[in-house]
Length: 102
Image (cartoon, rainbow, N blue to C red; front, side):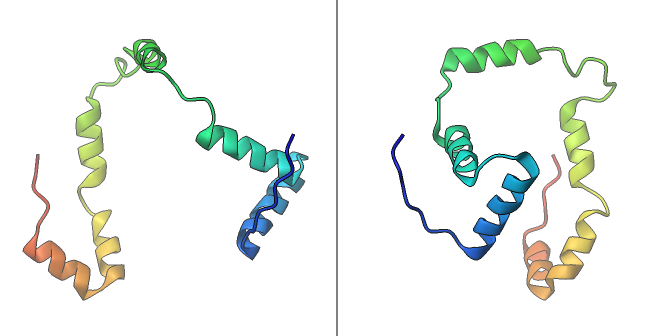
């Protein structure tokens, strides 16, 4: 292994310390794990195709299709609290560029 020095914010260091205490891993091990997950082994297109084939049919027990479920989650009253919390700039944007129904 090569030794590497990095700079972290106070918050990043705190997150790592908490994860180390929770998992029993060293901070170095946590960083190595994160590097592997983010930048590690690249999947091939055949790996992606294999995953798609394995997932085929997993939604068949649902009565509604996935697109309708997503649209139902995106629409309705859940958007209103976000707009109210953001102020006039978001309301003005939505007034001039309303979402288009699909």
